[in-house]
Image 1 (cartoon, helix red, strand yellow):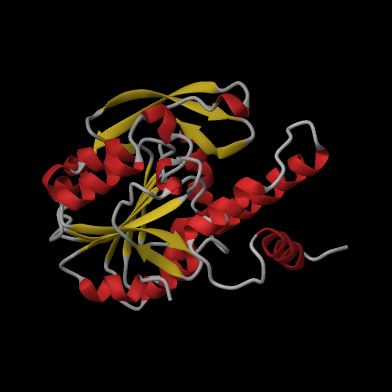
Image 2: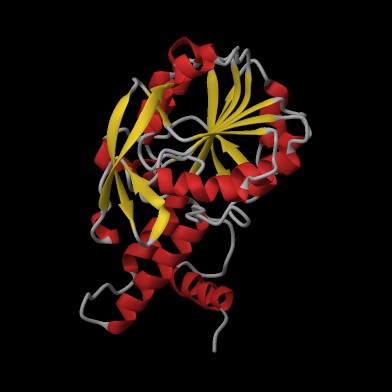
Length: 294
């Protein structure tokens, strides 16, 4: 059996010639010369091969142990963060690990679904620095209907995931993020992590004036297929964080690739390529360098 790397080498050499650095235009030209017959098994195999490779290249990986999430937490730990927010805490694994890595931090965790919050409470039991809240953060205080799927607690969302089958609608509570911050006397957030299955824009909107380069150092949020339903796309995140004086980049296994929004980059138009992005206050260039992809 031909190894994937050897197979790719043969494909490239057969279309471009000897493998060497080439211009993007040459690569595109070569790709367009390959046979593409939808009824041919070879063409389908090539499509599967390229699609799978593209997902890996763009880090479409939801495992925090391999997609860069846990390694970036280790870098952030060197900053000795004091206040951390985990919005969309799910069963509590992220909060638990954060409490072990961030030894001086108070972690404010928010899980909206009551049944999932029970699991969260069991996982984080005995961790005094974790403050668990059985409500979500949003742009106003109200009761919302959350779609809960039997396949995974991680799929729970304000929006429907048709591919996950039928959901049970559960009435849950959300509070305005800025109200919570004010009522709890939070003076600064070192690290804000948001994983709310499409509700990330509502959380950010609810921060009001607290969404500033002075008040928050680091924000991590999830971006992916759900944004095709919320209609809040990557360009919208770039514009929002740019207006607040944050640098934005995608998280990879070796760090964050900070880059401006590129209208010629196909992946930036494609919500399929996720899952995590990180924004850092431009008033903390030291953090930007610390988290930058090595």
